[in-house]
Image 1 (cartoon, rainbow, N blue to C red):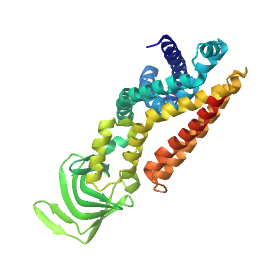
Image 2: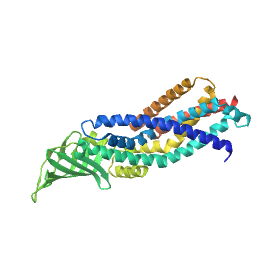
Image 3: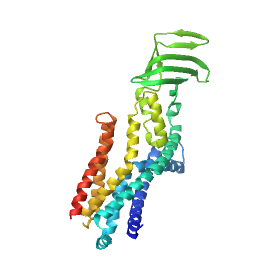
Image 4: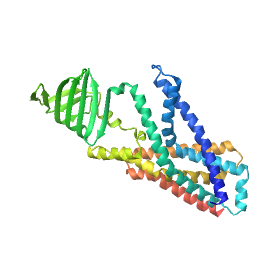
Length: 357
């Protein structure tokens, strides 16, 4: 590897590390304050809350990596310009386009590494964080999982424990449902079986149930069963996809399909992860082009403020399109890749203009 390439990559790594540490500290402090508020009625030591915050911080950092890359690129160029190193490179034949190419290729490679290792690692930590936190929540009285055998729910209500299994979720209904009911001492009360259960509210309507109790069997037209779950609750159970590794997401997607459950959120999340190396590359190039155009202005505060402003705009546009895709307003693939296409076009035009200078 040529000396100037090593120099540029090392300088970029230092800039990236500086911004990463700054945001790590900010997010960690914010997380600690959130934990203090959440556990205010529980006697836990500060070190335990600090530990929980450490588990949650990496997943938040992964979400804002484009923002970190943009600011890191600005810091990188501020250093080059302040030390007149950019002028030295130009005199030695290293033009702006070559520097952008080096940063772009490195950002893409680093993006792949971050997706494979940092994302999967942060998802494991996030999952541990949620498991510990949920153990202190009232939600531990009920839980739900999706397996190859369908949807399973443990529901504690009115001193009863209901173990529910459904083969599929179809619109507002659970299909092919079996509900095994126990009392608080875990003695069997009865087993309810039904082909269809309406779950639009927390008072489930069980249609044409077969009731197995004390070695006898009976049938009714309809019964109402109270539950902690409704359709909205079930839909939100698996919304925290950042706590799942890529392999877990793919496995969950297969289970959702077998349940006839919507995989839109999972597909959106997987597409975002897959596009991350390209996104980080385009953000780095975009920031580099901005710095080549305004870098020689002496007001460093203006440069950083502009970077933050542009980052916020890009972030909200990206999120807005993502929501449209998840809600079915526009094709999901388009919602993920449209910002990348727009950013690519902007970068391409800007590079041509930069090359003409």
